[in-house]
Length: 283
Ligand SMILES: NC(=O)c1ccc[n+]([C@@H]2O[C@H](COP(=O)([O-])OP(=O)(O)OC[C@H]3O[C@@H](n4cnc5c(N)ncnc54)[C@H](O)[C@@H]3O)[C@@H](O)[C@H]2O)c1
Image 1 (cartoon, rainbow, N blue to C red):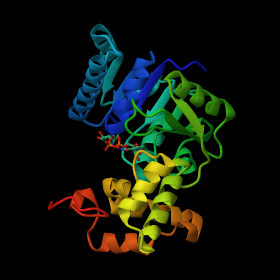
Image 2 (image 1 turned 90 degrees about the vertical axis):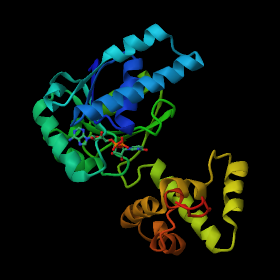
Image 3 (image 1 turned 120 degrees about the vertical axis):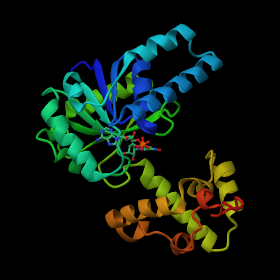
Image 4 (image 1 turned 135 degrees about the vertical axis):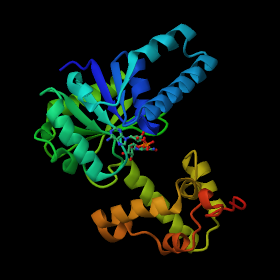
């Protein structure tokens, strides 16, 4: 089925980026949220992102107006009735997502593809909230959406081959690369990043200095950021929550390191509290 109309649920960090890149690829886009002020904020973020492109010379001023006019906004989920592809980017709560998918199931055309941008929730559980699990798929963008090239595409157990292929085609059409992942906790990217971070915590427990661990990963493995810097940026509590999900799925090999638990208990969460693996001054 040809995708023309893309409907994005949620105008936050990820939703407005998804709306922007879809409009840039020529789709008719509708972005929804629960309040007009969230939609205005999302549109303002898109405008700033397009302004940066104009400054860099990758977009013309007249193209900006055309792109902005391609993105419609709404607070009414019923406007998803004409959508060929829905991408849900609401907060990461299973109950909220299943309730949105139940509503979409009642609203959307029979052949519409229902995508979710979840970073960690099971696609199968979201699909099971609908009467059409074969049409539900994970389309997991990375942050910031306009910049990051890779998108994980995650079929659930009942997702049809046609829907998987159509989702991959959509990702390619917005000038990104689909990476097909299986529906297990953390898919590919979060699972590997969590494993790397956890082993880095053990390196520190074994007496390695945090700055040496990060330097080694950056200079010897060519990562743009070290795993401990990344933990401080994301927040040790957020990283621990992710690892606990991995532990529940995969057992001991992804059990949060004792050092991480100790830091979370002591309130050394990283940048947001002023101290984590590094000192950021008083907060
Ligand atoms: N932020 C990231 O780095 C990142 C990266 C990859 C994936 N994700 C995933 O993307 C999803 C969205 O994350 P985010 O960071 O954009 O969140 P966010 O909080 O920035 O935005 C979520 C938006 O959804 C809106 N919303 C809430 N309930 C809604 C409803 N019923 N209908 C429509 N809109 C509703 C909120 O008002 C908010 O504007 C989550 O599942 C998250 O795990 C986030």
